Length: 157
Image 1 (spheres, one colour):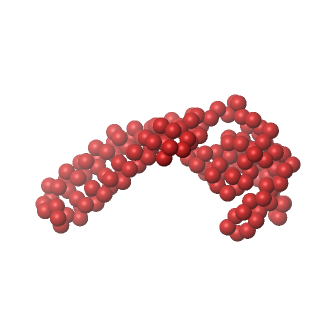
Image 2 (cartoon, one colour):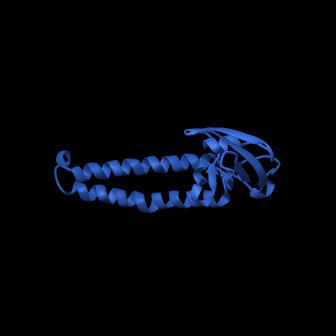
Image 3 (cartoon, rainbow, N blue to C red):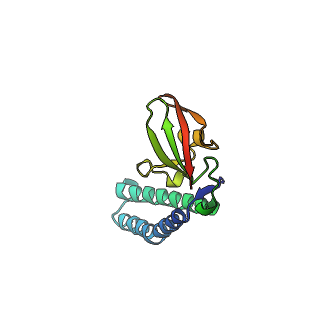
């Protein structure tokens, strides 16, 4: 994974804390679980040992992924965002032209996306479709349920 990921300072700190927790708490716990399972006898027929080894492998894969993401992470500063067009970290108010329903979303990285909080990923179909649009423009977005049309009403930092 060599793609640069853009995150806020808070998300970067959360990622660092999660990696630290995995290395200092989860990794020793996985090693202990393997040691305990090993003590229970024949490893060929020891399902607990197999499960502990598999859990350790999954944990190590997660640690590698986090290390890779942290190595390519770039912090975005909300204070120098261009609000003349939709870009990452902007808040965009859009109106669905079919339903006339208006909503506001913040465009964020995949790591920070949370629809309940009004944060949509820059890599989602809607996020991609809104990128680069200016107030007054219409974004046509192909979604699984058909073509959606949104009018860009307002862009703020």
